[in-house]
Image 1 (cartoon, rainbow, N blue to C red):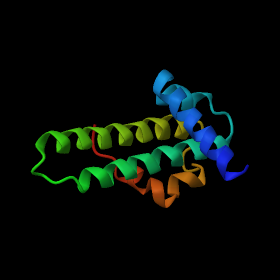
Image 2: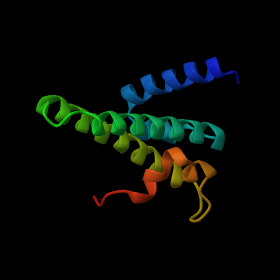
Image 3: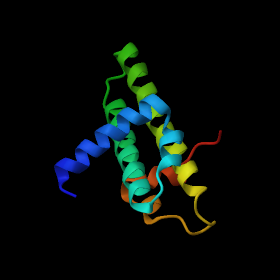
Image 4: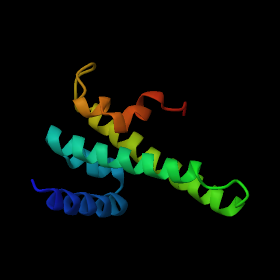
Length: 112
């Protein structure tokens, strides 16, 4: 699939994720390629938001809190999708995208 088509598909998936919930979208993905593309897209967005949050000056309290909440929200979307996708596979047989560099934070999930 050309890069432009992937971007369009990712944007559509984001729109669907916001409308239906990340868990619902992940549940409807029926093949490993689509599941991994979705998960990696969410992981990249979570990493981007975390970098923005980390680079926001602490002196801007309101903006700092906004960026921190956005980063947490994007990370939660990735955690939710990872939970749903992982449930589709036998223990120890997760798709390779769970080990992708973009998704390494999934292994260090904070306690609930």
